[in-house]
Image (cartoon, rainbow, N blue to C red; front, side):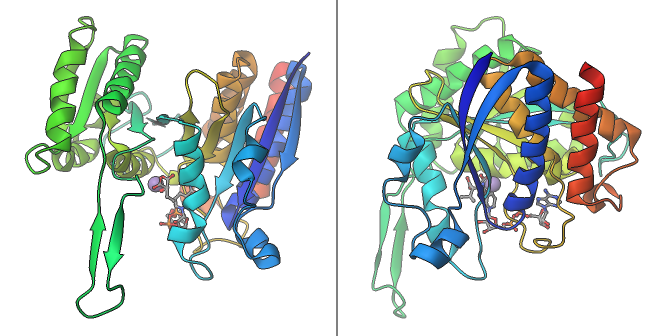
Amino acid sequence: MNEYRIAVYPGDGIGIDVIAEAVKVLRATEQAHSIKLQLTEFNWGHRYWREIGKVVPDDFLDVLKPFDAIFLGAIGDPRNLPDHITLVPLITIRQTFDQYVCLRPAVLLPGVTTPLANKKPGDIDIVVVRENSEGEYVDVGGMFKPTQADEVSLQTAVHTRKGVERILRYSFELAQTRRKHLTMATKSNAFKYGMVMWDRVLTEVAADYPDVRYDKCHIDALSMNFVRCPEVYDVVVGSNLFGDILSDLGGAIVGSLGLAPSANIRPDRKYPSLFEPVHGSAPDIAGKGIANPIAAIRSAAMMLDFLGEHEAAHSIEAAVIANLSAGLVRTPDLGGHSTTVDIGDDIASRISSTTH
Ligand code: NAD
Ligand code: IPM
Ligand code: MN
C-alpha cells in the first residue's frame, strides 16, 4: 500500500471549512483505493498568531520539508491582521521550495451554469499556467518616509531568463499533451524590459515545439477574450501577477471561484509541492457554513494525481462531476441552498459508491 505524508494547513476563514470537507473526501478515497495518507494538521495563520504572536513558527520551512505534499486551505484575516503580513508564509513557501509552476485549470463542468451566454460544458477548457517563483512577487523594493505626506514606495518586478524559459517550456510541453495551442500573456507595449524579454524568449523557445501553435496577447485584451471567446484558449501562460488575475477570472467564467483548484509544483520533486484552491478566506461568507468546498476537493485530486495516484484522483473528479450533474446538493454560489458539509458528505458518498 502506497503511503504519503501530507502537511495540512487549513489557514483562516473558509479555508478551515473547505479543508475539513476535502479531508473527508480524501479519507473516503483512501479506503476505496488502498492508499494511506498520514495527515498532519498545522493551526498556522490567524489562530496561531493569537496564541503565539506569529503567523507561522520560525522554522516552518524545515517543518514542511519532509512532507510529500502540502495541502492548504486559504490564508488571510484582513479584519484582524494586514494581508501583507499574513500572506508572507505562502509566498515564501512557493519561492523557497521553488514551486515555479502554478497550474490553475478553468473547465466548464457539466451541471454548472456559466455567467457567459451560449457557452456549454466542453466550450471552456483552459489551463492557466502561472509563473510562481518571481516576477511581480519578488520582495524587492522599499519605502522612503513611510506615512509622511511625501512618502515614496518602490516595488520592483524581477523577470529572469531562467525563470521565463522554464515556465514557457513547461507550458509548451503541457500543450503537447492537450490541444497543442499555447497563448502567452504579455504587456510588452508598456513594460518595455521584462515583457519584451518574455516576448523574445517565447519566440526562441517555440522553435523547439513546432507541433504547438502559439500566440501572445496583451493582458488587457486577453482578459476581455476570456469573457468574449474563452473557447479559443487551451494553455495560457503568464507572469505571476497576470496568472493570478487570469485565474480568478477563469474561476468566474466556469461558474464559481469555489470550483477552481490549483497546484503549486516543484517539478523535480526536491521539495514538497503545494495544493490549494484558487480562492481566498472569503471573509464575507466565513462562519456561515456555505462556502463551496469543491475547489479544495479538486485541489486534493490534483495532489493525488501529482503523487502518482491517478485512479484515486480520477475518482474524486468523477464524484465531483456526479455531484454537479445531479444538481441536487449545491452551495449558494451555484444557486443552491446546501451547506459546505452537505457537499462534502455528498461527494464522499459518491466516491464510496462508484468504486465498490
Ligand atoms: P476571496 O477569494 O476570498 O473571495 C472573493 C469572492 O469569492 C468573495 O465574494 C467570496 O465569498 C467568494 N468565494 C471565494 N471562495 C468561495 C467559495 N469556496 N465558495 C463560495 N464563494 C467563494 O478573495 P478576497 O475577498 O479578495 O480575499 C479574502 C482574503 O483571502 C484576503 O485576506 C486575501 O488576501 C486572501 N486570499 C488568500 C488566498 C490564499 O490563501 N491562497 C487567495 C486569495 C485571497
Ligand atoms: C492566490 C492569492 C495570493 C497570490 C495572495 C493571497 C498572496 O491571490 O493564490 O491567487 O496573489 O498569489
Ligand atoms: Mn489570487
